[in-house]
Length: 460
Ligand code: PXG
Image (cartoon, rainbow, N blue to C red):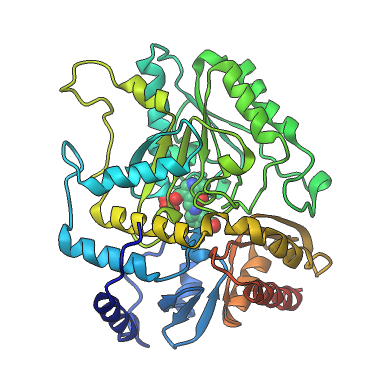
């Protein structure tokens, strides 16, 4: 897999990166861009505009360096602008920009599917490509419904999610999702959806290092829903092995296995949404491997291309895929797909990303660094308003008590403060999340923790 890097192409790419003009000079009109998931009026008053990225860092339009403590948005796992990936994208764009994905294909799509399957748990050998985590979730939910129907159990139409779950922003995803703010303004959502309870338990598990001890029995909430709806109506349960977007909730010891057992007992498919846990975040390629629990379907995105070109995937157990492979051979077996499924640029980026991960041992690096990160973040215990700290692999959450009557404000101020001091963290609610690129150095972890400590003190 060791493809030589073309120095001329790299030089050209780097030169053009350095000569970029700031996307928004002072006075440029910012009115037209309706920003995603952003406090946009605040933003447009004091914009945070990034212009360049390399390795562990961003540079803003004023040339200020910012240490990236969140891998962009949980995706740039190998660090920014990695030469092999940059070159693969540039080369592919010149070679073949687009290939129709329906009834046609290109060789790299097959190569990538095999490479991804090789990283997945045993028996999960089939890979369907999408363009995002949200699309992966929709795809997995539709696969689950169509699978049961194909095997003659078409009554299994109910989808079960979990409170505080995040599964992207499309209608299926917000229906099974459990983040109130992402659901409440969008009407009745999908019918036939229910939720098991979340696993957050500050009273018993606050300041757990790694997996919390208490809470495996929370998986039994699925039994409650089976008793209520009957297993014959339930197609699938979808959970994030680690709930990321809601603020880094690590699964209690034994919880995921118990969920697996209950699903098996009742013929319910188990879907792991590994959009943030996939590609090394927990110290193995997938959280399913870290926790030793194999789901039926697994969604991923983000780290698949190191965030460089949008791409997601659903990884399925072989027998689920094979169930579809009946009927006349000239007919389409699964009526689903996207114009940009297995896009050539995304495939090229993903193959180069997997090469980079492999060459540098990045998919297991979080396991080597998790104790160091744990030590760092848990040293914040005792700082003002810190009510919980949780960690595993190269991910951590620091939960703060909110400003009374003004939820999210304390964490948001900490985010702004850290950014001003040259460290980019992520906040959700009153929780600070850290998920640095897997190339992070120990001194950089120290720097992130100390910058955060100062910001937490100033926010007191
Ligand atoms: N599932 C999970 C588990 C995710 O974390 C998605 C699906 C959706 O992926 P796309 O590619 O459609 O955005 C995600 C995305 C945060 C944050 O608050 C996390 C995500 C997205 C936006 C913000 O840290 N994860």
